[in-house]
Length: 151
Image (cartoon, rainbow, N blue to C red; front, side):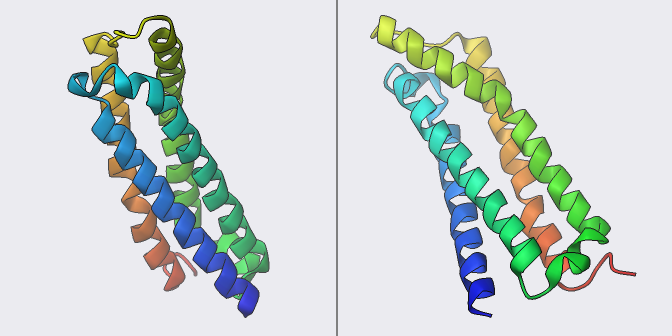
C-alpha cells in the first residue's frame, strides 16, 4: 500500500511538472520573448522530456506494482487510449524539440537571433496541440480508475 501511494504521488508530481514546463514553453514561443527565450527553450524542453519520462516510469510502476495490478489496466481499452494519447503528444513534441535545439545553436552564434515567423507559428501550433491533448489524460485516467472499459 505504501509503495502504491508513493508511486501515485511521484506520478502526479511528474505530471504537474510536465504541464508546468509545457506551459513555460508555450508562453516563451513568441517573437517578443526572443532572442532570450531561444537560448533557454532547449533547456526547458529537456526538463519537460525528463518529467514526461518520470511520469511514464511511475505510471509503469503503478501498472506493475500498484494495488490494482496489470490485469486491471492491460485489458482496458481506456488504458490503451490513454497510452495512445501520451505517445501522440510525444510524437508531436519532436518538431518543437528539434527547433529548440536549432534555435539554441543559432542564438549562441548570433546574440540577436530571432526564429523565422513560420517556425514560431508551427512550433506554437504543436505546443497548443500538446496542451489540448494533455487535457484528455486525466479525463481518461478518471474513467479508467472507475472501471470504464472493463467488461
